[in-house]
Length: 419
Image (cartoon, rainbow, N blue to C red; front, top):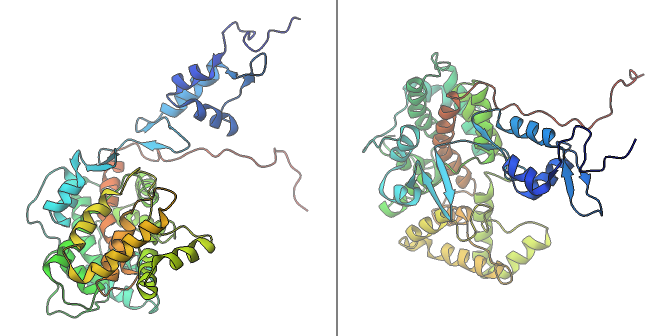
């Protein structure tokens, strides 16, 4: 029988070129080859060895699999994409429900921004309060932890304790989840041991959080900077912790459990700890009087310089730019700000590098008499509102849609039973 060749399959259907396969899948040509390397597509070399061809039905089947979930769109690279109406990051700017997030954070409190994220409605003057029973249970649980427990440990334990006091936690209706959100966030803050004792535990959330982080009396400029930092950090699309929250919500875990999933992820050094690393680096620069030896030591140890660069922004992180502008109005922040600029200028000598929000957060915490772990606390409290927004969105999707199939690469069965 005569060989049909790569472009003459026996069923008579012409094979697709790489460009045609990419168009059908809605991806870039390099992604088609990524599919081949991952075993999702097979290919044949064209005569002469230049380029590849693909079976049309196999490509169509993969396209159908990519689109089978109404909430999931074909990947543009190796990462899954999930439809969301919450945050858009585009051209070095980011938006919450279509509104410029930096402008929103400049004009509204953290609680107001959280409400906008959850409901798409603005509630001027909204303040979150926690039930006494929830706070008492969370404080008892946190107080039982060892003294060296980190922020994520304390917040995760507080969330679990608060859940245990809420018999309605399994009600996943929007109204019930919003009620949980408005009490959980202030419970997390109230459960943290105070650094500075005050006569009451009321007022805007940023004011309450300040007393858990700093022993310095808070001036209006510093409180505004902290409140703005919370608002800027409230959400940032599908970061690793947010994806974990959506997976939990997809399995219909209640809001406390979904938040716990996010808190588990930020404890990883590649996500929530960067602000603390930037804080410690800035203190070293201030101690040595120059960023050069500190940067050299970071690079010598094989570490990335914390607080620089962001994969989603070609230029400066807009969150960093907004926070730096506020910090310039705080006199005691001037030395740490100068150290941050020195770090950026030194590290960017050969490669363009821009400050990200972790460097700005490090300036805020280092200049406010806070521990380096304060940056992680601020990040976690802020992001809790964003996690709940994503959980709410996921509760409206088909259950268990966050269930990818494994690409098995082990030995093929049947294998003999082990001795």
